[in-house]
Image (cartoon, rainbow over all chains, first blue to last red; front, side):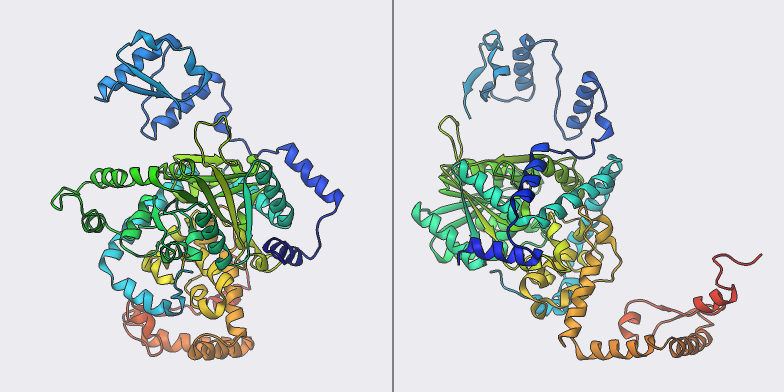
Length: 117
Length: 479
């Protein structure tokens, strides 16, 4: 008997039944498809701005720095300023993400950009 | 399998109580985890509701465990992964070795996995010429010190900072032995430097799994260091080592349980990294392992299904019970003698290796109930420890003097009038003898108590039951 059969057999013995029938497996598949969610924490009952503020509060609580920008055009300046402030090399590695593609990195030619994993 | 030393728990505990460094470490741990969990719980008013839902998810899963394991296997296989069903630790070790032999593995990086401890994987690797490298910082430290973990989420919690520095100086021999290792940051930076190249050079990465998701064939790990990600994404193969009960039906179910996992374990809103892995690297992926294997371990868990110990399979290894346990906080994890310490270990260990081997552990409890109170999955740990004590007694195990004491007590407890008469007599005598100081520094037969603390003398007014009768059984005094 394979390990698989042995383990499944013992589980079914403990549950006092054999393998589930079609009706039961259909019900379980429906449960999976329904993707039922748990209680939603009331703290997220906010509009978009409120959620952004909540995110910033929590992320700062775990020692993350946050800079807000008016548009994606401001991103290169903010990134360059952060690297300079922290005395870090001006090297950036960009993960493949559509939101990062349209940024005008050429505004800051001293940043060395590479892309990949 | 890790050496079993549960039979010497009492002696282990005595040694632990005299270990000054350990006692300092345990004192620091006592408040940290407990306070942070309390704060995290206070910030989430829905915490207890979510606990109930987490319990219900696991109960549903266990009632259909065969179905969800098969579904998980099907989804893993559809995406190019492999599931290996292993009844015993030996099966699991051999399965992993076979994978490593086929891939000509020399080094294996490991994320933290208690199942690997359970099956003795590191020793097995070394016996077979494969170098295991622990990448979780706590596991790395105890690997250098050649000792087992003492806590299920903070394996080196028993090690003080200067002891870590000593281990680094001893083992990182290529570095200046007089370098400064006073600051935690210095220790962290050195560990990162030592491990970075090892991540890149490893042939296979082994992780555990906090969840196995049947809906998608996904394994989930939670880490605070990112070591799990580097362990599983870079090498030729990722081996997930997990026990059967880790499976949950859906992504949403995993998220629900996750809401109480980190909060209960460390008081974090979420662990720093939560990583979902589904199958091996696809052609369009930038990175990822070439192969993805899930080694499912049974090791007697299937036999817990349908018994009074099934609830123990809801455990998500948060460690909250350990953190709140007065016994664990007094003796630490090594005293328990095997992989799983504290209240959860006191139930799981005898369930896996037998009450004959581990009967001491369920007796190492005052039944204060804090473990059950804080358990995110609402596992009735004291009740199961009591079942194990009953099992131990029924099998004629344990100390003869304890068994005799229980029989004598049971004789009187079954005869309430005689019990009350003797209790009243004892109460009167002790009350008379102790009326001056109100306490006893020594009592015959109570040496285990009076060695460390005074025994209070009964106060005037009679026993609780006497006062109860006097009030006619009412809950408040008569006007």
